[in-house]
Image (cartoon, rainbow, N blue to C red; front, side, top):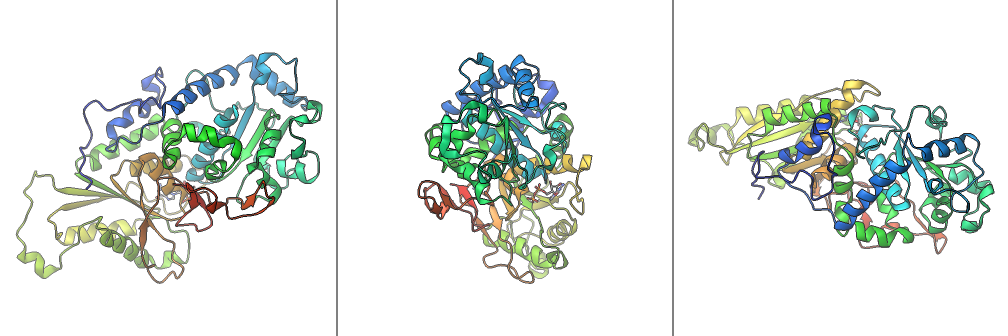
Length: 500
Ligand code: GDP
């Protein structure tokens, strides 16, 4: 049963159980403290340990972040080519303990959000300052998460001109430095500091190689902990595999006693729509969604261009999922319709609103026509809404990503969610909302609806699409989806990993 009270609940907890810090200027980022007014589902409570760690991390970001002496010194060392590790430098003043993680932003917005959340958790676990590459509007779509400092990488950062082109072939990648014996992970912290590079590039992208994947091993983490600057590129949610690194496990257990809510907390902590995006969210919600008793979000992402030619199969999949799982009322055929007396009086609230997000308009038009032309078997009124239809994925266009972000956020405000498997866009929405969606599987035959058309996700967590399959202790391949009960394979991407 999804009965809930729209908007204006009594005294919503605007700090989300201590997840959010106090003291920000409310007007500069309305979404931060207003969003709790729009969420029908109050979400999970963060653990006291997570709350304490976040406050500590904010302090670290202020102490070592841009515009501090420590940051300037660390950047200078990077310019000089390093040759000086962190831990081994016994005479270093305190501020030299500052270590940094730069997160490169690329690909679609969903990918970028999952990448930044992953980088943030890794930064917290390793005591590093997180600095985010500002390209692709990362500086315009989100508010600042850390009070009194900035998480945006300064524009004059020495590697800024080169890191955009870092790839699997970059000589400074951790994998290549291992391969070329520039570094040896078994050396651990015994490596003389003078021999450590100033920075290492962590290539954790879908095309990463076996040496890059050593990142997920304990010995390698010990070695990396002595390198002051790390630059990370990923397009996915690497968190499930961090749960398999032994040295992080105790801390992760304390931070997240509920492992199925990791992104839920990280996402609500980090990603607050900037005011122009919040305007899109709030106005749309109030005008179209707030009046409904129940909100059903349907995220339609068609990856296969051949499938685009068979939109009615996708529509059938949506409707058969909704019908099988009783998410939407059935419509009566025309004959029954005339026989059924109206069950609703004007002004009564027996309504459902469907929020559709899709690059195309066609699904929306069909579903809307269906609920206008026919009566529902339950007597409920169903309204259908779609904020935008951008036709195709535009890269690097301003208003485009603002709309995408607003739509992800609106989906997260729904009571019930149907998503398209494989899509990071849907993962972000389900995670922020703390919702276990019904996931529509990718069809193997594009001309037929998969059977079953959808299934209930096992958790609210995103799926890590390209995990390593390696046992660091045994030094051989292993199915990493069977090692821990809370790190399992995903339903939508069978080789992927997710937290449950
Ligand atoms: P994924 O490709 O589904 O994993 O999601 P991403 O968010 O990483 O990349 C898809 C991009 O296409 C989004 O960031 C949007 O720019 C655009 N896009 C895809 N679906 C939608 C949609 O339903 N609405 C809007 N506004 N944009 C979308």
